[in-house]
Image (tube, rainbow, N blue to C red; front, side, top):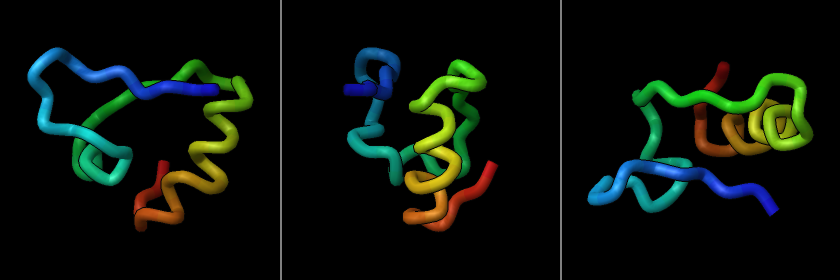
Amino acid sequence: MAKIIVKPGSKAKSLKDLKGQYFATSKGTSFDFALKMYGLPKIGMSE
């Protein structure tokens, strides 16, 4: 199971809350692939 980690006190509670923000993944991992192929497009974001 993958997790998205944010700073303590962040208002981000879901991937959708990160729209317009910069964030990083470990390139080439299964999470990176799934995020780019399914997660981001589902909420109207792209790489």
